[in-house]
Length: 513
Ligand SMILES: C[S@@+](CC[C@H](N)C(=O)[O-])C[C@H]1O[C@@H](n2cnc3c(N)ncnc32)[C@H](O)[C@@H]1O
Image (cartoon, rainbow, N blue to C red; front, top):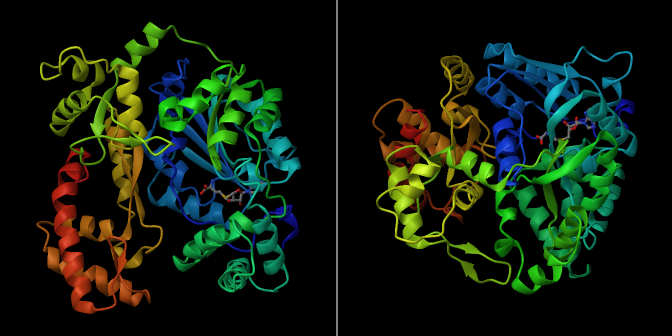
């Protein structure tokens, strides 16, 4: 391990990934849903990502917000080199990448930085040393504007308690082999799998090993190495994260997972009743994690919570426009923790779906449209929470031509399917939702064909199956692996026909075709 990593692995790069919850407007929506005032992202603002990896998330948001000033920090030179190369290639001049450690951000080598409206850290907090965490808090204290938002994700307790010894075992097995981290973690997982198969390791580790083995089978060795091989890996209780961020004057502003706002989905009636008497957000959240076993949290913090009157929140949410992100189902139903199904008002939601299929609509207009059933109780906050929370819709933004042009330049960097990763797929910047969408390798093959004119579905299916073979695996279609060539092609053709019917209207709606 190189000395500059401070216990964090530095011999391989992290997986390329895009995380929509780090979007400024997405963070603003989550805060608004909790009844909090947010920065105005229609005006110039400053955004900082700490531990940006290869920079995909910041690049997408910089392309979509040309009026924002973006900074992204990571101490790994390979990450920064790749991110800078993409920023140059897409001609994005509102983003700067800094090859700095968190500790260096406030020292004599600190780059010139503005005060920020937003700071985000995804997959960083529970993987770095206590010294790095302290440097992050000092940075937030010094550089976040009053009213600014922070997104921080981490492995959470107590869900990790039972299986956290696995991290230590994987790390010790990997450390014992003088190999590069991705190879070493692969061998460590093989050893664990062998022990699990032999039935010599206790429950509940076996289920966790099966999950990790699945990730290894999908070739996610860079992810596994960065998840498990760091010296300071440590899951945390929510209340400890709240306490750690308090010196930067940060207060918890809710989860960026909008469905967490619906207790009916997160808690059984008995849990809800028992927790209702607990005072204090941090304690209630921590006890909720205790009851429901959340293993990963995406928390939002604010420097100075300004609470909105309920009527003001409802009015602001009603003024938002929604746009479809996925085909609208016949019935929406969500599973509660006790296995029961929660169905929001089916006729009201069906009428909303009908309208959204025709294009983006204001939430207020959707709720008062003539087709809505008499006396329905669906309000703007519920509608936005459910539809955005389950990924069926996103808030639609009328963006300027500069954002459209930058997104086109960014999307124009995408290579043909055969030159892209089979495991990570691709991310496209969508100006209409001020965010990106991720496409799997299979979807992207179809999209690439659709961009070039009417799709020959069979030819696209042949191309996808051939790619899977070249990558050394059997094609997996609708969760099933196909060894036989003819069966694989006919399954891929059927799958593509179905996808084309469902996705083509959406790609048009998003302005991609
Ligand atoms: C698990 S990765 C997450 C990357 C990215 N946020 C994502 O989710 O794709 C953690 C990142 O933090 C960076 N990192 C770790 N410790 C750091 C430190 N002390 N200073 C700066 N960057 C650090 C690593 O190089 C790595 O890119």
